[in-house]
Structures are given as C-alpha cells and as structure tokens.
Amino acid sequence: MTLAQEIIVQRNVPAEMRDGTTLVADVYRPGGEASDAEYPVLLTRQPYGKELPTVTGYLNAIKAAGRGYVVVIQDVRGRFGSEGEWNPSVHEFEDGYDTVEWAAKLPGSNGDVGMYGASYFGMTQWQAAVMRPPSLKSMAPGITWGNYLNGAQFRGGVRELGLRIYWWESVLALDSLFREYRKDREKLGELLPAHVSVVDNLPEEYGTLPLKNLPDPGGVLPHMFEALDLGIADDVWKYLNIDGRYEDVEVPTFHIGCWYDVFLGETLRQYEAMKEVAAERGSMHPRLLVGPWTHATTFPSMIGDLDFGLASSGQFLDCKGDMTDYHLLWFDATLKDDEDSLADESPIKVFVMVENRWRSYDEWPVPGSREEKWYLHAGGILSREEPAGDSTPDEYDYDPEDPVPTVGGALLMPGVYRAGARDQRPVEERPDVLVYTSEELAEDYTVIGEVYATLYAASSAPDTDFLARLVDVYPDGRAIGVTDGIIRASARESYPAPGVIEPVEPSPIVPGGVYEYTIDLWATGITFPKGHRIRVEITSSSFPRWDRNLNTGEDTKDASRSEVARQRIFYDPERPSSVTLTMVEG
Image 1 (cartoon, rainbow, N blue to C red):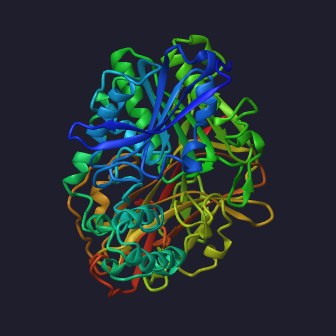
Image 2: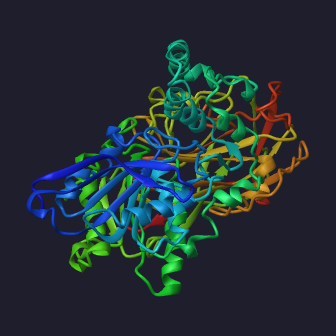
Image 3: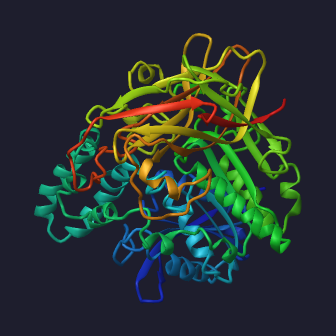
C-alpha cells in the first residue's frame, strides 16, 4: 500500500566513518503529508555509483519510499562520491557497521535498519552483519558470496579469470582512472581512450600470458595484480570470508539466487548456514528464492537461448509482483512486524526450468528429494546402472594453447559471451570433450538440488584441470547446458566434497596416477521431459571463464610455457565415475 505520494530525494548526504573519512549517499524518504512520521531504513552499500540504473533499479527506491521506508544508497569508500582509498572488501566490515548506525539516526528514521542488495552490495551486508551493529534488524542478500574460494576468486582451485578480469578492467577501472587523474585533465585525456580500448578488447586481453602483463594504462589497478599473487591457502581469505562467522549474524535473512549465477553455490551455502543458526537460536528461519536468471539485476525471462516465460522474470515474478515487491513483503514482516505480509508465501520458492513454473516448499533441501547416481560407461553411455565389468578408459588430449571455448553457463563476463542456457553442440564436436548420454527418458525427470560429479581420472601432467557439465538434450538435437563445475588436480584436497572448502597448500599429482576427484556443480532446478536425454560432458577447460591450466605446475600469473596433457577417464567397478543428481518425484 502506498503511504506517500511525494518522495524527497537528498543527494550526497555525508556520513563520517570512525577514522574521519566521509562517505556519501543518496537518501529517498516519504514526503508531503507523510514526511512527519518515522520509518524503517533500507540501506545498500556499493562501489558502482549510487545513480547507476542497475543499482537504483534492483530495488526501486521511489517505490520503497512510497511504501513507507527511508532508502539509503551509499558509495563505498574510495568510489565515486565517497572519500578514502579504494581497497576491495577490506574496509566494508567497519564502514558497514558505522553506516548502519549512522542511517539509524537519519531524519525520518525510526532507528531500525534493513540491508539489501546484490553481488558486491550483497557482500557488504554480510560484512556489516558479522560486526553486530545494534540497529541492523533484517537482511536480504542477493546473488552474493561468503567464501571467495567458491566462485568469487576461485572455483575448485581454478582462478575465475573471466569474472575477475572483467570486474577489474571494465567495471571498476574507469572511476579509478577519473579519481587518479582528476587534477590532470590532459593526462586523463590521453589515458581514457587507451583504457576504453582495453575494455573493448577484453576477449583478446583474456589471452594474455603471463597474467602479470595484463594492461593497466593508467596504473590504477594495483589490486588486480595483488589478487593474482593470492592462492587458495592465503591467510587473507580467513579475514575476508564469512564462513565460520555466520553465528555472528543476529538478524533474519532472505536469500536470492539464480540457477545460472556465478554465486549460486554460495547463495545456497549461506542459506544453509543461516538455517542452522536459526535452528540453534529458535529464531526466524531464513527464506530462499531461486530463479532461472544469470548474474543480472534485471532478472529477465530470456536466459541464453531459452525464454522461460514472463512469470519467471523479476518484473512479474510468479504473476504476483516485481522483485521490489518481494523485498518489501520481507521487510514489512521483519521491520514493520506485519506477520500477514508473508502469509501467502512459502519459505522456499524455486523456479523449475523447462517445465517453467515456480514451486514452493517448506524446506531446503526439498522434502522427499533423493540422490541418484548416473554412471559413465563405454561408448559414451550414461546410465543409472553401475559398471559391471572391465573397461578401457576414455582418453583425450588437453592443449592449453587450444582450450575449449566458454559457451554460456554461470558467467559474469562481457556481454559477447552470453551467459545462461546455451547450446553446447559446437563444444561437443571437439575431440577434447567426452560426451556421455542417456537413453530417451520414458517419463519426466525432475532435478531440484545438489549436483556433483565423482571422477576417477589420470593425467600425464603434474597438474591439470577436470570439468564436468550437465546437459539437457532435446529431441531436435539441441544440447542445452544446465550447470557445470571444475576442479584443479593440485587443489583436490581443498575441495574434498560438494559444498566443502578446506583450503590447504596445493599438492601436485603423480603423472599417470589415478585419483578420485569431486567436482561440485552446485545445484539446479530443472525437469528433463519425457523424450529428452540427460548428458554429461567431461573436459579440461572452459576459457576464458576459467584460467587455463598450463599442465606444467606453473601459475599463469608468471608463466606462459604449456604442455599438452593426455587425460584418461575411468569407469570400471573399482573406479565408477558418475554424476549425482538430486531428483524429486512429481
């Protein structure tokens, strides 16, 4: 219900942090006859510019203010209008706490603060929350992460090259360039076209080896090169990760995820962590919403090659309202004590692709779901039957100079790569991609939940990568990628089971030795219809999404020399390679 017909917008409202640095925010609050009352505050903190449409549009600030909230959109330290030095993520703990307490005292605030936002400004919520600011009462973290080793910096021990280079070079660099050279307009005029050229040519820049030679025309990306020096066992992750600190979060949480998002695995891990915390405390259980989308705050219905229908989109979600409406239902319940606002919504709401409808549940994992193994067999067969006899392993050569190209999936990269549900047939034609396919399904087969591969493999190299991808094969031959994952052989001990991350120093493999690898494909929600087939692809690269393994044991940061690796995949009774799907009846 709209409470205010007029909205007051105050720009660049200053907030002083504990060290004297001033951060600025735009504040939206009810005006006119509604201006004399006090309201809860909805706060988001982000590094992309508080006036950017993708920032203001994620949760419609005008609409929220009209519904009786004070909305605060802040530029984090060192970005756009805010003072200080930009150092990604490092200052967000203390600055988050200070900003929450500042926002609680704004004119028109009733002292209660909720936080919202996606991606980096989802992470700023967690960083503030673990500091336990007294005025924080609710959170709605969307498409974000809690552990940098599971999709943000690394995945399965492999550098998230496509995401990181795009983020540094394209998303962040221009503001840093303007800030660095704002007093030298002539120099800025020289450097700006040079960096725009870098952005325009990112697909070519991805091929740079060694990575320490990546372009930085204005010298404004020191953190990019510093991050390249970090490994999975570096101590900095202990400081930045939220893992192990969820018990410090004292407010209820509403988690928003996407089946084709780069942070899907972390969204689900965060939900599970907060569910455990709530159960121990006897407090309000978290809620979970997962749609078919990619890492895009517009939440469209067209995802890659498939259109999942208007009701799948964030503009008309389940034919009930837009993403702002869903946020406000949550905040009405947790900040305004309106218990009826969530009465018609189940705690778990997930979109099931291909059948293209929303399903509601009381729990996650879905009640009644069970794991089923699908085994790899000779002749490219995928079956629920366990291997019964001796077999010769399948083999292929992985050449880092000719990696398998990235086609769709859970990407955060330049638009030319088109994330989401994409046809994998061009990839499957390559000799370095093994394909295992089931018979046509005699009935619908629904998967909602965890997906992982168990791979028994050997390599001629001291280090290499293995990738598994789940594919939906249509009767017309289309092979639509559903979800995938990757593991670096030397990082196998750091990722011992699905959803488990226990970082230790990398350990090379013995060339020719057979090792068991767990490849976490995170999760999905899809119905494979009758007449479709289930397929699993096995390969060793998806470039430039993931950094290439040079097969030498050397890091691409410093090295460029590579070797071709001979890979062998086993599927006999003693080494039964498989993919595990979480299936749901009906």
